Length: 203
Image (tube, rainbow, N blue to C red; front, side):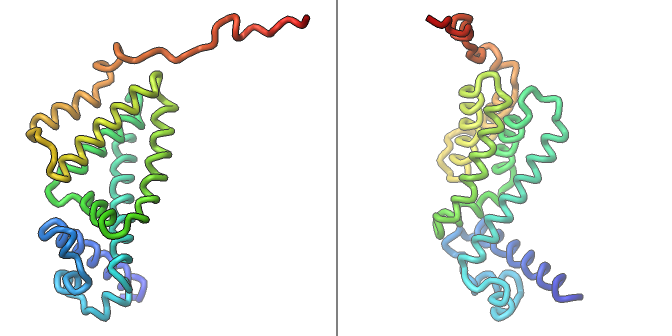
């Protein structure tokens, strides 16, 4: 095995070990020693790839972003006939974050707790997604409200703050995805009045 392949294999093992620790023991138990034990990699081998815990957290965040961006792309490809494909993909991605007990979304909370500055990466990504959602929507405000509701369901569930059952959450996600249920609430895009469009006559 060449050095590049060995390095990638080590990084993958470290990320999976870190995710397992976070899911099982919580972010507070994530240390380099714990990662070394979980992954079976020597402390020296681990520190050759990740000098600090913060470096591991950044790798976890990058892994999380890549995972969900790939999920979103695949969802859009499978639902390219949706009236608002970007919105649908984002709602489905929010649902995916709580679909599995050991979701990689927990990496996000670990990064927030330990290194808040890392979140500038996700804020920039979210801003781009919101722009795409607004651009495709007849009623941008309603589209953003649906996105926000889906994000809120996911975050409160991950934090253990959501009082709803799994079945209730699933039903709400399905409603958020159903464009027909929202079409009656959508406001038509504003257009300039005829008087506003008409050029002013010169005095």
